[in-house]
Length: 192
Image 1 (cartoon, rainbow, N blue to C red):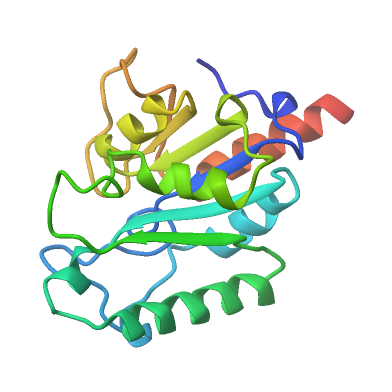
Image 2 (image 1 turned 90 degrees about the vertical axis):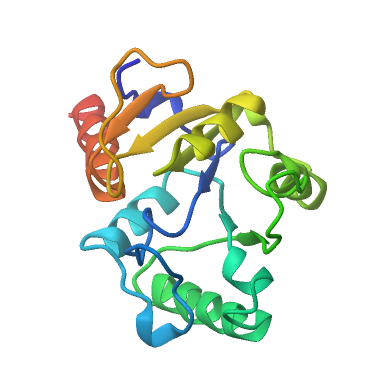
């Protein structure tokens, strides 16, 4: 499927993974404090642009480091408070953040399981999963999105691009910035 900015309106919801999408993933370990959190180049501008398109922007992130005792829940909350403040400072927004700290793959909230999507729907009744996009850098993110009927966007920031067509990937880009730039370009071309 080709990108199509004209279909996205304020009644659409954007679901974003965190590590490897918004910020640089630390291979083999976890981002355990704000000093270790590094936004990808262009991410702040991308989220500003996406905030103009989507009615809700929600982060859904597996954070096993808490469950393993490598970091405390307070550390994670601190990271997210700083992340949201920085995004807001640059004209973007994150409306809600859902985390799964469980170490168990079978936990209902651990992607690709759909618990965090169901929590979001419970909190924001207006969410329609058929009018939602899941953006992530792992196939577990894509499966999470597909299980809920979402459109999926795979980012090859930390993994190799997938061969298309793919059962769980509708579109793929090299970064969140590249996807947002494509939407911005297409929206501009529609109105020019």
